Image (tube, rainbow, N blue to C red; front, side, top):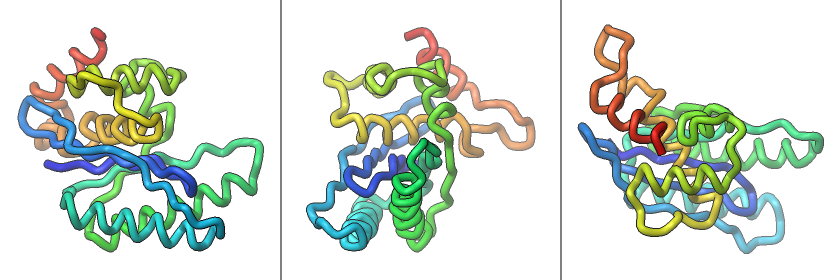
Length: 179
């Protein structure tokens, strides 16, 4: 199962692709979509086109995206929502089921603390994926964290009809919490 995690932004949208199978999770790729266009609408088009290209290249089976964090600046939040919408449309047009996770849910799933710093999340992502180096930039490691969160929270890891996690997921989660 290939999972696409997305950290939405109109300036640096993070993406992370992982493969989850039986007892293993491995990094496929990660990075950021960074539009060079100065006009906001042109950046949205670039983000949509790049996400569409990535989906075509890596053929993920499920997508996970971070919910918008509502801050003090409503105008910035509105722009973030528009970028998020473009990313969601690209995923949906490709036929991906999409899960939505709050930042606190992602942080708790990966770092064991819903208030963890971005650096702590980055470190935990590197540990879970057994990477030799920290995934960079932070937007990319956040996207990987979203994908990892999805492996814990989605139906793909829930035993059929029992409402319990599969044993291999329990093993992965216990390794994540111990670190």
